[in-house]
Amino acid sequence: MSKERAKRGTLPPAQEQIEKVVEEGNYYGAQQLYKSISARYVAAQRYTEALDILQSGACIQLKHGQVTCGARLAALFVDTLVKARSPYDDETLGQLESVQSIL
Image (cartoon, rainbow, N blue to C red):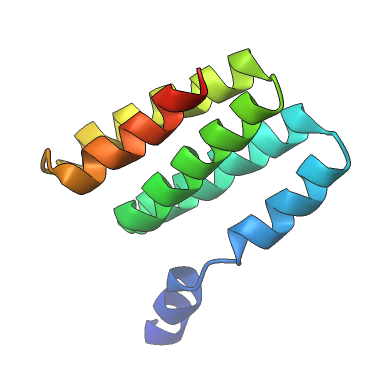
C-alpha cells in the first residue's frame, strides 16, 4: 500500500509536456493539459504546484491571444486559491497581477 501512495505522490514534469503542445500551436490541447495536471496536483494537495501551473498557463494562453483559454485557467487559479485556503499575501497578489498585466 505504501508503494502505491509513493507512486501517486510523484507527478510528471508538467511544464515540459505542455510547452511541446503550446509550441505546436495546440492551445486548446494545452489548456486541457493545464487543467488535468493542475487537478492532479490539487488531488495530491500540492496546491503550490497547481497554482504555479495555472498561473503560468493563464499567462501563456493570454500572451498567445487565447483569451477564453487564459481566462478559464485564471478562474481555475482563483478556485484553487479558495480550495487551498491560501492566505492573501504579496506572493498571491504578485501572481494575480502577473495574469492581469497581460490583459
